[in-house]
Length: 468
Ligand SMILES: Cc1ncc(COP(=O)(O)O)c(C=O)c1O
Image (cartoon, rainbow, N blue to C red; front, side, top):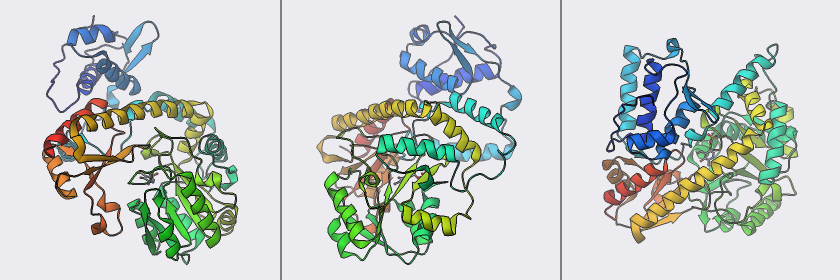
């Protein structure tokens, strides 16, 4: 067996799999492990180092994903040749920068960020292959501007996926691709017209609220009840347009039941208004029956459906889309099709091929299982360790939960105490139009980017931080 002399630090803030991954990566980069040399089997290495096979598996998966090794079926894992010229050596200035960044991320042992996803499952090798194939595909036109609505074959794939999995009924012509929810909200505000009266859930997604405000529209905050946006308050307001997150209210997390969906659709019809349905993480549902999107339930063309690949694939790709009802599509075609497409054609074509070849469906299935497991670990760890002074809110779907904590600490104190134990948790009050209107001490915990052991460690540290 290849000699493995790594010393793993059990007490280090760096998870074991990462230490092991870094060890192999360095040895391959500096040539100590030669190209085509076989790495020890998972079983042998786990026995040799006294660690679990899962830890070895995760480290190997990461090496595989990054191309440091290749897996040959029924033979084993082999080191790849690495072009060392391509390995970045930090310049003096950038190393200073990276020190600052490192300090920032190292100051936390566990970061319950809700913007992170399970990158360890991103099909990097497939994505790299498809990106390269895309570059070879059609060089004559590929570097020129594409369709302003987004590449048609991608929109066809999206329309088929939306119908089958979210019940959205639309043709590819109704889909506008764009880079980011905030960009699409800006475009949509112009299409609807700034004279309309806009409203949104309160608490709600602060980035959408900012995007509306920056368009110069005044957004009426509508409080929530147990089922989502309050119909009573919506009717009392003069709003004609409302923005909601029915699959997993952001940040509180309730799934809007069918009765409320029907009431909301009736409201839109009566007001001759529109509902903006942001289905940002609707792919990940853990309990309850699947409910069709509002768009799919609406016979009257009163819903604009917003979707994103940020949660389900990767946030950096910046591929979002909106589905316009026919009336708004007409306005778009008449006045706004002069706006060029904001997403790179290269990414759009890569994603199209990814969907066409069936990788998207497989990826979603894999992620559903991965996030379900992570969420179960989080919930059971909270129940086991934090006792009855905490209440879990919004755990039916999505990649985050809210924790209401009743130990006499205010939200800020909960965050500061957690920071002392090197755990980052996030405030909920920033999502309220009026920061002071949130009276319940609640913090937001995302779990997508954490391993199960990091989640468990994080909860144990919170128990100590909050004296529960
Ligand atoms: C409510 C809501 N909508 C949309 C998004 C995604 O935004 P984007 O697609 O611009 O990355 C998020 C991400 O956290 C979100 O919480």
